[in-house]
Amino acid sequence: MKDPGITPYQFGALISSTILATNILFIPSYVVNRVGEAGWLTLFFAAVLDVTVGALLFYLGRKFPEQNFIQYSLTLAGPLLGSLINLIYLGFLLLAAAMSVRSFGDFITENYLPATPRSFIIYLVVFVAGVGANHGLESIARAGELITPVAVGLLFLIFFLVSPDITLARLRPVTLGAAVPALRASLVPTALFGECVIMAMLMPFVQEQRKTLLAKGTAVAVASLITALLVAASVGVFGAVQTGNFTCALNQLTRIISVAGFLERLEALFMSVWMLTAFLKIALFLWVVAWGLRQWWNLSDYRPLLLPLGFLLAALSEVFASNCPELLTYLSYHPYFALPVEVGITSFLVLLGWVRFRGKGGSAADKLAGGHR
Image 1 (cartoon, rainbow, N blue to C red):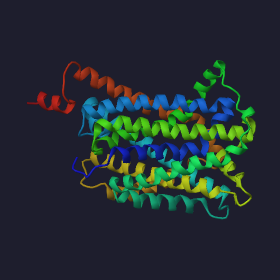
Image 2 (cartoon, one colour):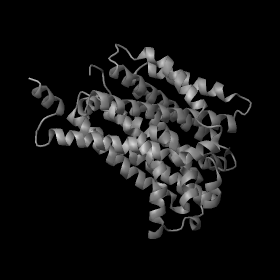
Image 3 (cartoon, rainbow, N blue to C red):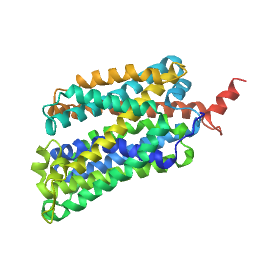
Image 4 (cartoon, helix red, strand yellow):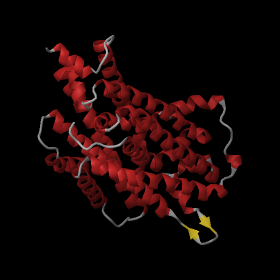
């Protein structure tokens, strides 16, 4: 692909922001509600599975170094089945973006701007994300290069500031018996981590593709570590029962910060982190869907697709759920839609690639070219 490309660091920054944008909002309360003090363990299971899926996508990306998911799915599965896979894949990414947009609208209106119509917030978010997507992947990656370190630093700062209020007695050791419930509860964070299947669309743009898997693993490790620390901090400060009853435990956590009676009520720290990563994620997903449609339909440019996709994204987010509690209820069912795409389709394409090209060296694209001579 003729494009300036992005660096492995920028790629990793985009992956970290994608994970944090949703995880820091709902995951701490959700996992603690399900498994109590063992909630942090669900992040470990989610990270392991996500890196495993990343390794499969890395395999496909190295086999097709000049192609993204939309292109090599057609190559491996044929035009009919490949088109169906592309439709499901892009539809899933649009649904994931809609969930982020709706989370943004609900959380802002219910906690900070109750007099503001939710639709106004939603369309404003989509507009800003559309402007970012219109500037292209390189601009989004540069924004991620700046935003992600700031977000990570602020989240570590929040953990450091609340650490004096943590009661260690509330953080009981996790027993072996808690591992199985934690594994079951990890389905939701796994599905949210798994949205990073967008790496299949980004790999052809990464300047040093061999470093992509390392960048992916590092990004997932950082994001899961931060989220696990915040889960533990929430339990240590509020206890498992109260943390599980919150809609967003991290928002409550920042409200109890007090440094020398001067530095207090630092919800702005949380809001700045979450809003920056959310805007970045929505812009990236909107670009990925538009770029995927452009390549699937052999269009000359993806930008004319942004306006209709933006309206579709806003409309889809409007009918997604009526409030935050309903959105949390949907999260329980999200893995049944997400994991078949993230794990199932990825594994299926890897299997097709392995069967078709086993025992032969070189890239898959070279072998196909050779087969048509």
